Amino acid sequence: MIHPLILLAVFVIATIVGYFIIKTVPSLLHTPLMSGMNALSGVTIVGALSATGVALLMRNHLFVSQLFGTIAIILATINVVGGFGITHRMLQMFNKKKKGDKQS
Image (cartoon, rainbow, N blue to C red; front, side, top):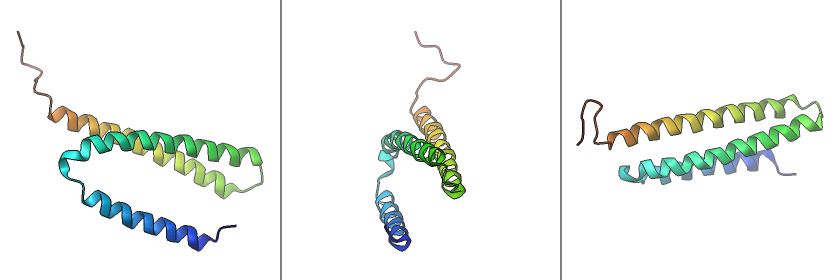
């Protein structure tokens, strides 16, 4: 069994590395990368659904695993919806047509 401190260390290191990687990305690449991250967050939702389903089927009375699974599903869904909303707003900035303009 993996020790919880090792899992915590992996989480902290991944967070720090992820922060520095995102910090170095030029602002012009944020929209394409955000679209890719939305797809990855969709995979996270599928993983969270699978893990929560297994926790519910095992019925081993580990309410904590079911609670964390539910929280993971909710947070991943918020991430996907918010990411697509921000991507849509950013892409609207590049749209040259205005609502009142008529093009012939």
